[in-house]
Image (cartoon, rainbow, N blue to C red; front, side, top):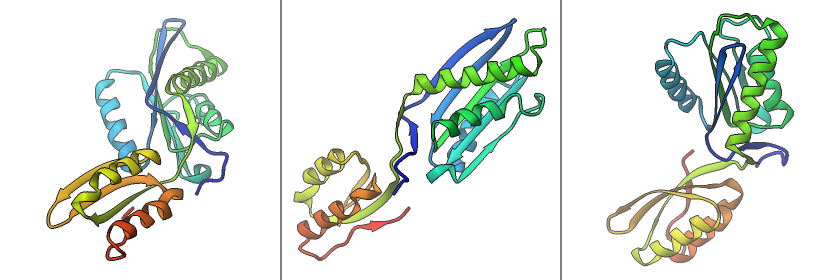
Amino acid sequence: MNNGKDKTLAHRGTATIEVKKSKFYGFAYPVTSREEIDKILNALKSEFSDASHVVYVFRLGIGGAQEYFTDAGEPSGTAGAPIIRTLKGRSITNTLVAVVRYFGGTKLGTGGLARAYGETARLAIENAGVMQFITMVVVIAKIPYGAVSQWALLIDGIGGVAISQKFEKEVFVEAKIPKDEFEKVSQFVAEVTRGAKKLTIIS
């Protein structure tokens, strides 16, 4: 369960601003793991390999239990710090924010840099949209063929996502569901299998 205050992003968001010919490109992503973060960052660094700086910040878990930021070569406290303050101030977690800068030839000063990075991040977050953070779990079960359509309706109805279905003697199903809905889905599996199968959390 979450702490009731945490938020996350509804989807990917972007933003662009220009300050004294320096261009700042902001990207905000909802994420769930370090592996996902690393994959996104590798793609960004490859796409913007000619950029002056690629600053990034992330928070993961309840209350942002795992967080990290880097100034990526900018003066200390002028790039990553204002971005993570925005995330912490709004209790946003499971989020990666990256800001790419192309230097325009005029130094902005520490205050100017902090404002530019902070504003770019804020706009990207607003573009992404903020929503209540819900702890999700991946579950698996085996259900009868006749229960597949009911399974799909149930998963969709609780805000879950069907991951896969494998048709054998029975149907092997996998889905990502809100952790708070585990008992409801578990009861469904027990009912359609007459107690013969159980719902299992795998991650």
